[in-house]
Length: 220
Ligand SMILES: [Fe+2]
Image (cartoon, helix red, strand yellow):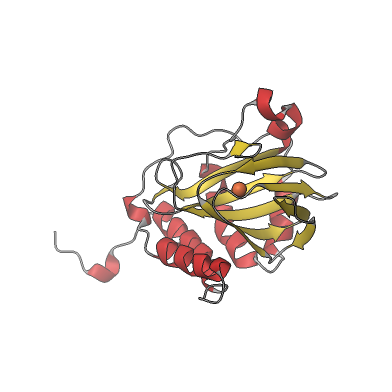
């Protein structure tokens, strides 16, 4: 059959994934540059996300449900109305297809964390909805008044705050408050801690570098 290229319609799953990775790339691109390591990583993440091909992705066969203690409707509403609204709106049609994950076992981090926090990859080498070799990026939620204890990982990391307020600390430095629209850079192996305020924290993250080694609690 001879099909006109213009008449070929991609399946909805691919078009919404394309819209999502494009919105994610654009957010990082808006902060990219060469002036700082943070800006350089944002530019690099933007290029890597922008180069992905969602039609080469794979189905998320083992879909894990969202932790029951996460108030996702309220969190999404706030994010869609905030400075990162374009990313949140692009994420909404994909939310039922993501697989929620936990980095740590309940014995390590406690039941409250398992019930009220979680993350899901959109693009990564091993999981997520879009196959990627050189960047892992997705979304993380922490419920109100929750502490992510000191942890570290060899990958470099960016956190982009979609909604909420939280305090970050790197190594033995001061606690610093961050909210929607803020972009934070974590160097390889840096010890970092996050504690949320009275509202949930909604983050987009990106890792580059050693993507095969998970975060570990404590200090190196
Ligand atoms: Fe981290």
